Length: 274
Image (cartoon, rainbow, N blue to C red; front, side, top):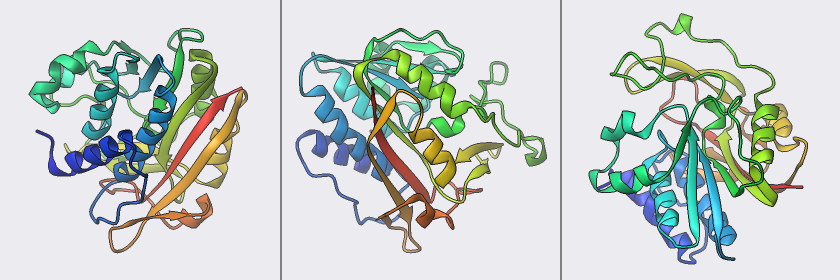
């Protein structure tokens, strides 16, 4: 049984897989997953419709349960196979998963390591999915010794890493390019707002940072060598708690995820390997 909000988003994604139109649901109180997961379902439905499809998901282990449920649904199809890369083993955090999902979750092969330095299979995948994960690359590290937390994070916000390397976008997209077949696609989402390394406080009260994209860093991400943009769209969370589509990243420059439970602006994009 999923938590209510995860179930709502998962049901939206299942409707989209079944042919329903993608909309911006006018339901308050949701994170950006209500935008990202159904949108990704639409594109994955397109990419898996033509026959055999191999998907590589980045950030699988700690992903939102609605997104993981979508991946498991696709993996159960005869024509679709999901693999993953993460810094955390699923077995390490299995208490966060529905018990009746465990067998299906562990059937997905997961390579463990830093995406930026891991050896990538060449030309193996039709689609790479990176849903609200790239913003954590360069900040989060796996915690191997403390069993109470999956990540190395600090009780003191002043001890948290202040920034990330300037080459994260280029290294990550180069890795995706290598892993994809010719003409393959990347589905990628990220928080959008004022931009920069913003401070977060997790559910355990520990501090970390994530990268919040804005006009310049998003443009850099979208224009890496070897890719063309198929689609991109931007969304902001209003004072009423409802998400709405906006025209450009600069429309979200007053939004921030700083010390918030989730982003107040987000971006969605599909890239094609050329």
